[in-house]
Length: 224
Ligand SMILES: N[C@@H](CCC(=O)N[C@@H](CS)C(=O)NCC(=O)O)C(=O)O
Image (tube, rainbow, N blue to C red; front, side, top):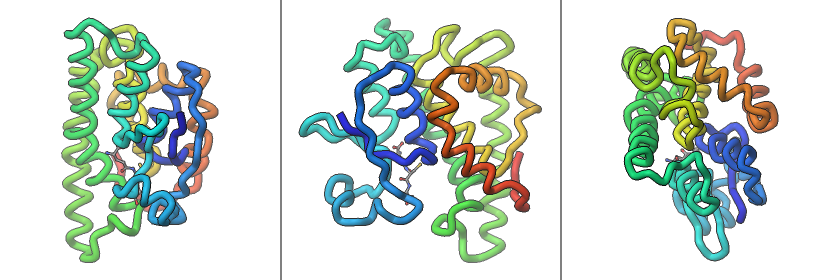
């Protein structure tokens, strides 16, 4: 199998960390999205979405990070994607919650329009309103994540065992580090992220991302 990815990419990181933890034999191919390589014909032909990640398993190609996580977990019989239908439904619920509710406001409202020129609104007032909206809505989602999904005792999102929802959710929440969000008002989120960061795979998988975050320090970001 081969994974087309970028180590800084929010939705490549969960797949990278899962593959590392589960020691799944996957070859890695970096698509340099910061230099526009995802628009070059070689990659465009394979993935007309011009996005990473994409998994290739023989002649089968799969896009969408959450679908890739599910596929890899099913293929390897990983405990991180429970077989019991209710437990599995819970994992799917949390994946969908992050992918739709949370990510829309956090990623595409608060963080990315500030960081990436192609997502910045041309009109300064519109830009300010988009980011302000994203910030307010994100506070609500973070509170729900802190109080409802995690609560004071849970080590991981769906109980005391790690699931693919944790890999996914942690990668999305850590995207806040790009604009230097401070999550100290959400202690359950900080505890859970601490668990994810303690995993041996974290240092290697997140190394390039952490370097990128260090390079964005000291700018006048709108952040939590
Ligand atoms: N829903 C897709 C989103 C993929 C996506 O947005 N990938 C970003 C990297 S995090 C990308 O390739 N961006 C390139 C661009 O926007 O030009 C997934 O979860 O895989």
